[in-house]
Length: 248
Length: 331
Ligand SMILES: Nc1ncnc2c1ncn2[C@@H]1O[C@H](COP(=O)(O)OP(=O)(O)OP(=O)(O)O)[C@@H](O)[C@H]1O
Ligand SMILES: [Mg+2]
Image 1 (tube, helix red, strand yellow):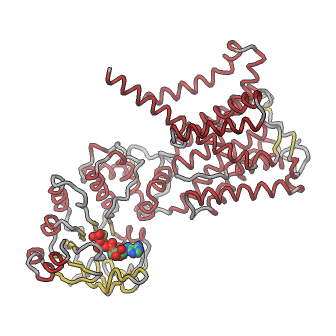
Image 2 (image 1 turned 60 degrees about the vertical axis):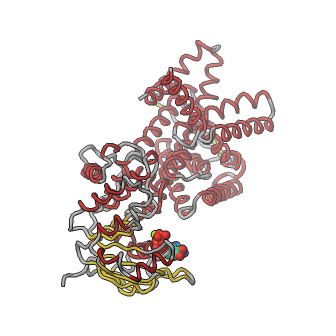
Image 3 (image 1 turned 30 degrees about the horizontal axis):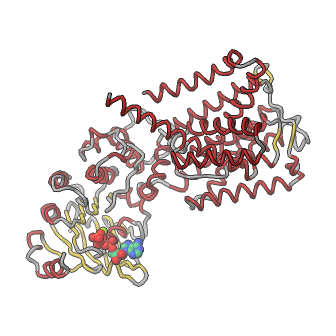
């Protein structure tokens, strides 16, 4: 079997007395689409944060294509091929869409530093525009992010995460706050991602999580409680107990 | 587009002003306006620009900028030939001024490095503490800074055969420096460095996640601001024919903040607008009333602006433009 894109071995994270993530172990194969679902507070975002390096796990081991990244800094992981979005958008409000993407693109380049203005032929600029195209923001290139709608901000989040050509793309609730009309567009966009990109997706909306994934991980109280194919999830008794039991 | 035209108009008006003043005012008044109002406003404006640059693009409010300007001023005064008392001396202005700018840049980097982990009110307090620390040190140190008396007779160089003390020569030299620095700021904020700086202002966590060093960018931004403040400090020292601790004391420090806020922290041009308003008040109110009344007056102006338009006169301008634009569209 080939090396997994991502391997989590007994990853745990505690905040004081709170065990936010408990002994999570799973492999994500290259090209796989994995949804992570679970009720509020289940530890999904915390798990993302340990994988992306916002803080290290309290214990356990994280490997990216066989490389131990448990203690690597966030930007090192970005350069090693992890791209992520945040549950609440973290954008540069005072800059334009193009500038946001440009800063993101330059971040992963070896020559990030410059006090010279980039010319029109800067490849980073071309790439920023291509990314805008990809997340359907091309008409808004010179719009300040401040003036974007919520849905457009979520699209830009994904564009920024794609800037480093990630091999593993991690999306934290990309549909959060999107209108019903915007959701099919998101799903369509996720489906256009090439299989060279491994996708891990936290999503409450089953109409996106299930069709977008090959396999679903269900978390509750920091633990993985079910791992199953998307067509088996809705009938799974444990999942039903979680969602009906908590009155979700 | 309109903004660019307005900016050119301001520059053109400033360039024409001292020559036109004799036609508007009695000739003996022209020199007074050129030196005491416009020349002084530009010098203060440059120092305020260093604060506004950090505030507008980095979101950092530094109260150390007057002290950093003083660092350049003192360096020039200490090393230049002819200053009284002669502390080190021996250098021409052509050598002492770059040395002063280098010292201010280094001081800026140092302040940036010390304050690198602080934000908001804590950044304000730590930069104020640094400024006051340097002030007290300078005031009590005789060997290097001649204590509270300071250093006199820093008359400035001859520029292309003209005496720097000539009000018009000084005015145009200061205006040229201000124009270069202002243009430099507008250029810098469009470079990758400047964009990342604005990224830090908007979302430092994302900047770090993208692989940039937030700390390094912050320190360098303070270095840039140090250079700008240094240029203002050199000009201020020549303008005042010397430098004493009072020029970097608490009052002077707060004045720079007041100018910046009056002008507006949302755009670097606010530094010059605020400095001009401040100097006009300072010049004429101080004539009419005594000092304490002036402080009350400028305090009230400050309060009014903060209450009416949190982004200063620049914000008032923008608001007016919007209002007129709306009227225009409605008509
Ligand atoms: N930085 C932190 N410090 C302390 N506690 C935290 C921190 N981050 C998360 N937690 C706690 O850890 C638990 C798991 O939170 P997490 O955000 O991972 O849940 P989630 O599954 O993403 O939930 P949601 O669906 O609401 O986003 C929660 O109880 C939360 O309060
Ligand atoms: Mg979450």
